[in-house]
Image (cartoon, rainbow, N blue to C red):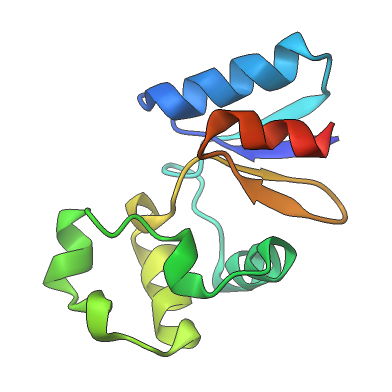
Length: 113
């Protein structure tokens, strides 16, 4: 079972979902922009990804610059920003019980299969 944080307006997110479904994966889609993950969920996914919080963020978003997050070195602050502004979460993210992967490039998602 894969939980897929999805933005249907994003071509990479759509491509990743298609790839998983075509390979027969059981996928539960979470529209994370309207169903934002909590700080606890983000922290759990960060641990599964094995990355710093900054590495799971969309640094080109306007709100990233407005909040001056490029200088933040505190994962807690960055996690809180993503919870408050889910547009900051890099997409897509595919999550299993054991691990998670950011689907950029899309082919990286196959590691979950």
